[in-house]
Image 1 (tube, rainbow, N blue to C red):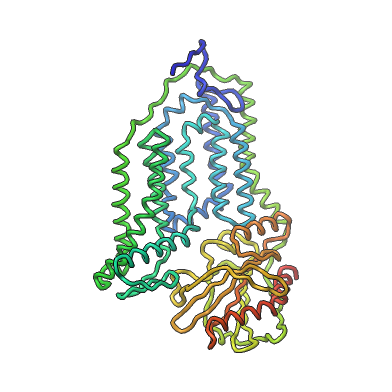
Image 2 (cartoon, rainbow, N blue to C red):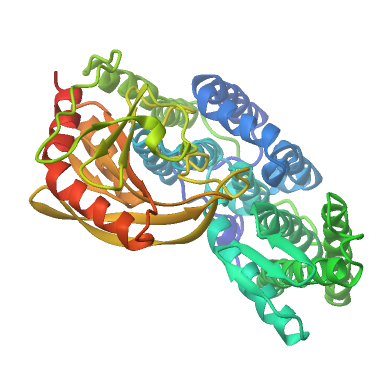
Length: 529
C-alpha cells in the first residue's frame, strides 16, 4: 500500500512520539545519547552490582543456567548486525521508558525487601531495558526489540518447575514402562522394577533441556523468520519438544538399563545419552524449521531529516537526567529502610513445657536434619508425653539477603538426593496450633531403618503460612513497616512407633495442641526480647 506524503514529511512509523524532538541527522545529538547510554549502563551495573553478581554466581554453579554467560554477548552481536538500522530511526528521550524504569526499580525494591532473588534480578534487567528505552526512545527499542528483550534470558528463573516436571516425568515413566509389560512399584519419586531401583531426581526433570531449548529456539526463530506467527509457532515447538523428548529419554534409559541388566545407562553415562538425545532432537527441530525460512529484513531507505536545535538538545538533557534518576534512586531507598531496624544476633527465648509434655533426649529421635542454610541460629529439642517422642526444629532468619534468606530454591525439608532419607508422600494438613487451626504441610519419609512424619510451616513476623509467595509478601510488608525481617521455618517431626503412622500423627496432633501456645510465645519473644 502506497502512502502519499507532502514534501519534507516522514512516514508515520518513523515520526517521533517521545519527549523532545527526534533526530536523524545531527551526529552530536546521536553521540550524546550513545555516550549517556554507555555510561549509564556501566553505572547501573556498578550501582546494582550485588544483584548482577548474584546472577553470575548462579550461572557459574548451575548447569541449568550456564547459558547466562553468553546472553549479553549474543544480544550485543544481534544489535551490531543491525547497526545500520539505527541510522534510519529517530532518537529522542522517552517518557514511557522513564516510567518503565521507575516500575522496574520499584519491583527491584520489593524483591530486595522480600528477599526474592528472581524478582530482584528480573527487575534489574527491566531497569536496564527501561534505561535503554528512556535514553534512545521508543523507535529505537521497537527496531531492536528482540536483542533488547533477549537480555531477560540472563535471569536464572525456572527452578520452580522442578517438582512439577519431576512428577510429570515419573508419571510418564510409570505409564510407559507398564505399557511395555514391565511391572513398576512407585513410592514418591522412587520406582522399583524387577531389575532394580530408579529414582527421578532434578536432573531427570528436563528443566535443563527446556531452558536451553527456549533460549536457542527463540534465537533461531528471530534469525530465520520475519513473520511473528512463524516465530511464535517455532518457540512453542521449542517448549513442547524438549518436554516430550525428556520423557522419552527417561523411559529409554530405564528400559535400556532393564534390558541390559543395568550394564548400560545405570551410572553417569545416562547423562551423556541424555544430552546426545537432546542434541538430536534440537537438530531435527532446526531442520524442520528451515523448510519455512524467510529472507532477512533489510534496512529502510534513509529519510530526509533535520538536525536538532540547541534548545531541543538542552531539553533532552533534562529528560536524560530524569532517566538516570529513575533507575538509580532505589538503592538509597533500600538503605534507608534497612537502617530503620536494628539487626543483631538471635537469642532464642525459652520453650517451656506444658501439660504432660516434657523435655526428652535428642537421641530418642531418628538422626535427621532438614536441608536449610543461611539462618542466624537454630533451635532443636525433643519432647515426650507418651510412647512417641516429638522433635522441634526452628531455623531462625534475620537480616536476610542473598544466601541468607529463608525461602529460596536450595532450602528444602528433604532434597531429592538425600543419602539416607527418601520422600514417600507429601501434602497439606490442618494443624490445631494452640487454640487456632493453621494450614501446614506434611511430609512422610523413610530410611533403611525408620519412617518419620514431618510437619512444617513458615513463621513471618507473627504470621503463619505454607505458601512461598505469601511468605514473601508478608516479609516485604513487614520491612516496609519498619518491623524488620525476622522469619523462621518451624518443623515438628515424629517417628513411626508400634502403632505405625497413626502413632506419629497422634503424637504430632497432641503436641501442636498442647505446645502450640508456648511455641508461638517463644518465637514472639525471640523477635521482640
